[in-house]
Length: 238
Image (cartoon, rainbow, N blue to C red; front, side, top):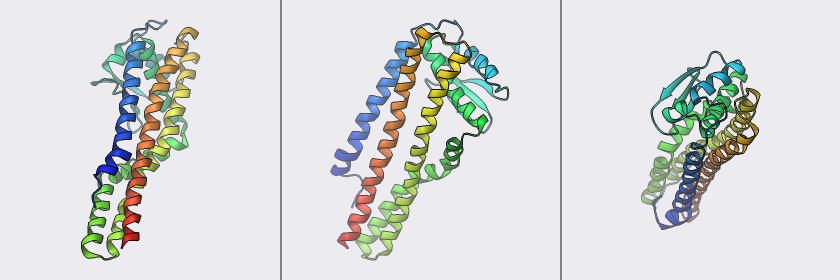
């Protein structure tokens, strides 16, 4: 019994790859489109960030520029807003939307947003589950096949529970990200960074990004269901 086989490829891996490609393409195309649209303020992303942070009372957040395309993130551990070079120096609608989204996370952190705190606590379990969970499921299935004992089932079940942490992480991540996007639009408007004509472009940027979170959640759930079908299907065949 192997995790990688034709049913897995057709019903799990292929749909996830197709949706992942669509999500990635949508984000990149939308970003490229609105990175060509100059924002009305004329401010580069790094200055947009400083204006919004000051307006939101987030004086303890440090802004720094990092390498990579769309590698922007907020790190709650050291209160750092990391902006990719293209976003930090960009004077576009796309840049201000990305900046505001990440500051949305900084505001969540500042206000003790419950879902964000849960997500941060789930990161170690999710990392362990994504790496060790499938391997433990395989080990348990092989034990069941070659020894015929019920112990293998419980080993595989332990792997299944470990991988469930990945699903739980994605389940919490989705509302955290959607909330950050809602905050982003409000932060842009409240701090005079965006004019009404730019709001639709920013909204489209954030909507494209939101689709990637739904795809990640769908992929985790679909993979968990497949693993569960192997574990419990093997149990019935014993």
